[in-house]
Image (cartoon, rainbow, N blue to C red; front, side, top):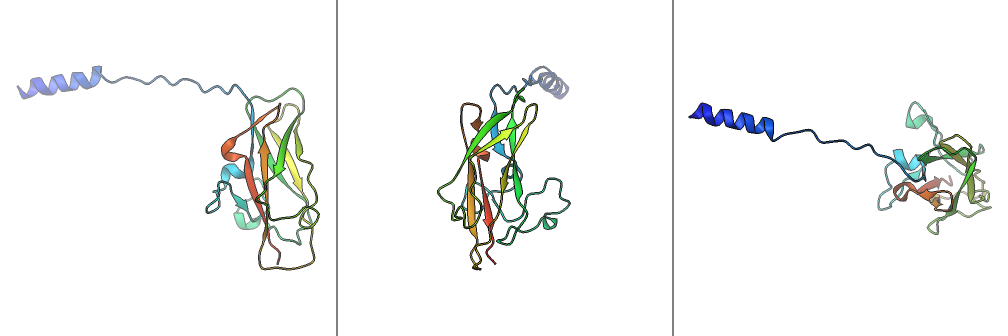
Amino acid sequence: MTKFFFSVLLLSAFFFTGCIKNDPVLVSDSKVEFDAATFNANAAGLTYPVLTRVPIVGASTPTSQPLITRTTTTPFTLRVNLVGAQRASATDFTYIINSSSTAIAGTHYTSLSGTGTIPANSSFGFITINIVNPGVSSPNPVILVLELTSNANFAANFNYAKVGISIAQL
């Protein structure tokens, strides 16, 4: 009797299990997102990461990336990813300075255009940021918050549309 129940249980396990069909994921529309937001954790209490170091793709260690300070003289770039099919022609994306920013254009950074371009047959665009030295040191950093916006060309990927840049005033 035990062998019979064991056999029925074994056969039931064999017949009532099966493979789950994995449907391919097809992206039908294009979105843009900040590359830095996809590999950095969100800051405490915020829905976006706040960068304190210059984001360098392929850096060997986080500490090999220089700190972002008021004396940063080299412009640095934030990469914007295109999620979806590449385009045959260059396409513009848009962004704004979020109202939660404490950094002031012309005082802490040079004015930004609000648009960027993803070149033809590419998956990446860039936003170049120039830090300005206001000449006054302070123990409190200022934060520049950039936010991608949807336009006729691209929708902004909601989870990765914002990134903060902490500019140390030391």
